[in-house]
Image 1 (cartoon, rainbow, N blue to C red):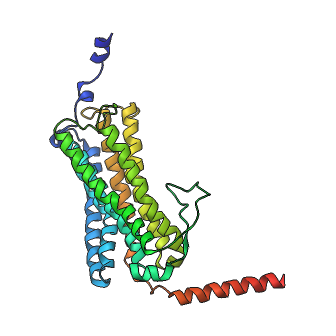
Image 2 (cartoon, helix red, strand yellow):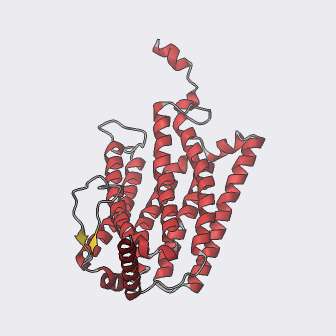
Image 3 (cartoon, rainbow, N blue to C red):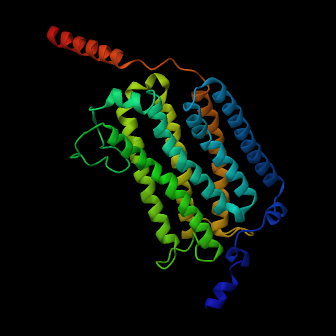
Length: 328
């Protein structure tokens, strides 16, 4: 019975991803058009990013321009790596790890940007030191209503920065370790057995991701009202969208491939075909995000109002509310 079942399965469905030359040989006219269009999108994303880097370098002060260059590079880097993965399927693990390591640094840089918009750590602490910060935010503790507000301090800010920075460091270390184990045959992303290394490294990276996103969310939720004039909400939304598409979407597609929902299509196995679909979708999505993000960062904004101005505005709002309540 097993022999009859195995005889109905195309041998290509059980093989590793094809070589780049095999991908090129099996492309028809529509395949060439699709691959050419996606490659053009990746090239345009890269060119727009390089042009954006020149603009940021010339018009913004240090160290803010370094932070913005890192953040603006998230979508273009993922797009270019996805393009390499589309043409060279056997390199997908390397391209995905490169994209994920880069985005791990971007997570930390977003927190740094939120602090630098107030003038740096010293100015941030001068403005918010002693003020209670709500830590009941996603993705870790959004449902923990009992969590008290924590006053901001230099130690608190340091802990938040370390919480975001640990992901950038450990993600890179674990990616290098995974590649080393893969060359020795000890790491296979599709091996979900309890004795496999992927089942241990994957969830651990997931925990690191959640613990790094939490500090960024804490800073954003407590400061975004002061930064609305700098369009910080749509900027943060673009960062969150890149996170969801590059992490969650890819994971869902890979799970569907392991479940057999995505069918084999020689010369691509089920997992290789799912990876190909993921790379193609990622290129289109990151191209659109690159265009949208460029509009938010390629402009100069008015300086952030001082703390005294904020206090005056809050006092006026409180007085106006009291007068309205008195009239009623």
